[in-house]
Length: 569
Image 1 (cartoon, one colour):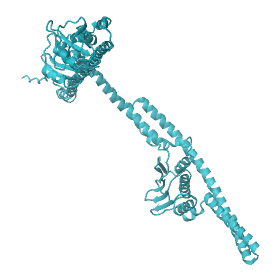
Image 2: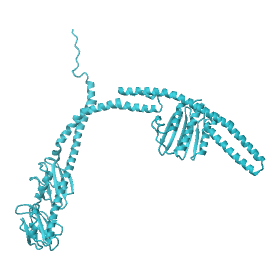
Image 3: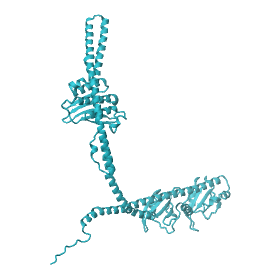
């Protein structure tokens, strides 16, 4: 009996679970993001393009309206000039004959009336009677030219606008007539050219169409209401051909309105089509950029930042942190290995230099101790004995003059004793070995308080424990240097010195509220920057394996913190 063959898996379903997960968690979100980016950018660009077309059309209409205003003002000025000549007594026929160049602007003709409406002269005048609109303007005539309302010639159906001017109530009246349609056509064709999609219209203050570039244009009541409501702007309306933009601007002399209407999509369709496919075309580039960015951040930028932090710690004397790998590309690993090698060399050099500095410091302190002992045990004691003998001589001598001289010698001797004691204290604090660090710092603060112009305070916290002579002397010298820097450079109102004994550490803090300074980025910059006092503090801290922390803010003061991590008994 043949055994039943095992069922074969359906082709393509072996990795079905992983495929679905990749599609659901990676491919599908990317596709959705691309679609969102594509149609979102399309809608966004559509809105921006619509606004841009509106702004451009509005600017074009304002420019064309400004040109029409200047043309109307020019024609009004020409009529005012003719009225001035008529008021000066020039013959009316002579005035019009010598102004034949104006017939181009005044295609309806020129005429001069008397105040009684008698015809004095005319040039290409084609209007038989005085129409009501002209009579209304003549009745309000003044020295400044005025424009009449629209007049439609019944003979040919042309639109006519009259410009009227007279210098005085008894002066001749000069009238010029022109067709606003001809004016608009000549001016607007230069500004907009011939565009089949755009419709250019000129509307008067009574909402009558003076000119339009499309013969089959229909009045849009809502659009006219919007355009007549302000000096310039743009609105959007829906029509059979889609959404149109209407840009408008007023013409100042007459209150006319110039309107430009066009379907904005026709202007921006090519750009929108390109924008629609741009995100899809940039998708592979975006993915490659993301991969490159991830690789750069993971393998280059982040390791370099870690290496920079560890190099900064290395500059402050932490030689262990540079040993930890920061990862990244091979070049960064080679750079770290080079820094490790240099750190080992520097550490070896520092150990030798530290031993040398320690030997020099020890020899210097021993010499100071010897000098201080000699001055204290011999010179000062001799001066004290001399002072006592002077006092005995004063007691036995009754001569007034000799007593005065002995008193001067006694004062001088006492002053010399005080100076020698100050010198011996500066050379070597003898009470440091006898009384300990706390008493030595307290006396140091009191002595500097007497000579300084600012109040100095000392605070001691915790149970005092004696340290090795080298450590106590280093802490004392660091406190002495810090207080000297405050007195000489800080310009502070007050300063403080504190010594804190905790179970695991000893902390020495020196602070002031002075002018502060800009702290160098590493100890290597102390000497080039002239901070020799800070360099001495740093070197003394290194000698006793203490950590030196300097914090300074300009205008707020400086704080020096020395932390000894392990206490020596």
